[in-house]
Image 1 (spheres, rainbow, N blue to C red):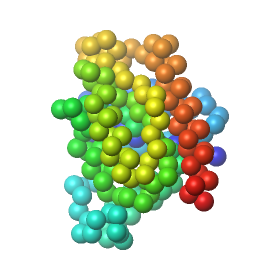
Image 2: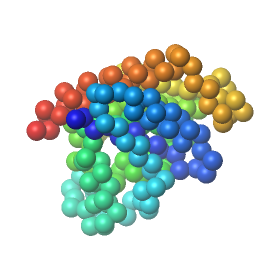
Image 3: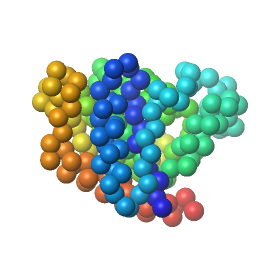
Length: 185
């Protein structure tokens, strides 16, 4: 069965991302085309990148890096749930992505973003970062606006359209993830 990680990139206390990621995970759990797992960057315990060698040349010296590499390697595809901070991704997410290299390659990714501009600029940056890691990103993205999709910037109010768009993201990620599985074999 296809394994897809829902990666929550924010580590802030009282973060909206946890609410959004739980909603994504709940809808994903109703599907039968893949197995989904919520991966919270805040729970990884990764310090700022502390490997002596660049991840692209390996090997990984630190146990936390080897553990994270094994976790990333276990998935066929990813759905990133990310806020937009200063027109980009949070440092915690960028750091987690940068820790490993080969484990990302030839896999698919989709995005659920949020922020005052829907998080679209964070996803634009994340697409560029993932392209360098040889991750194929899907076109559809669910962009949630802090003003219109949340009450008081915190209480998420998903609509039927949000669910429909998320299902399209998940359809595309599952399809591309399955296709790329043969590339890795």
